[in-house]
Length: 246
Image (cartoon, rainbow, N blue to C red; front, side, top):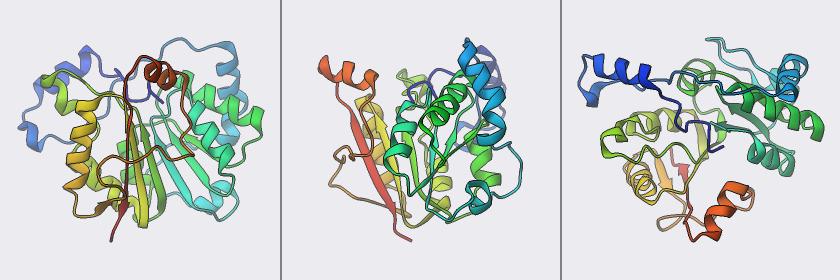
């Protein structure tokens, strides 16, 4: 969850960004350069043995959710699930919904696959690819019941704010994929980023806030160990839940 879009852009990204000839406001949403980290034996085995069953290979072809899951049910996407603990918890608590997790970090992919297998979760599938390309090429417009993005990298330095995931162009793309009345749920522990998220989402003509500002944490989003430790230290966490109003 925290690690999904957290600190995944390295010096190679900086070179690419600095070499970009377009002005920042016209610069397209970019993916990141992957840094894999250490893959445990259990995670490796999960990718090898469980992956063929639960991994969806990236392909510029629109997904048929009924074919992928073997049933008809509301589809919810989580972008950047990190090690997958929250994803598994939510999928387990909402067995009547299908969950598509997007993550590029192989240890996280292996971790979620392992948990899904151990818990017998039949409503989880994983795409290991850049979320922007998945949304653009694999997800039909108005097809998702919900989208979750929990604790994306806040890029706290002002000069890095343009690297933040939640930007107007990306929010427009997300809104296009939501069903009428589908929801977008964001969470962050960085207040300044929370304020920017609220500003960007509130400016969207396609979305409406379900709360007067920040939302109470929905019951389905369980607190992670990371979050509990932060709250114990007096840190805040801000949830935003917007709905598609078109």
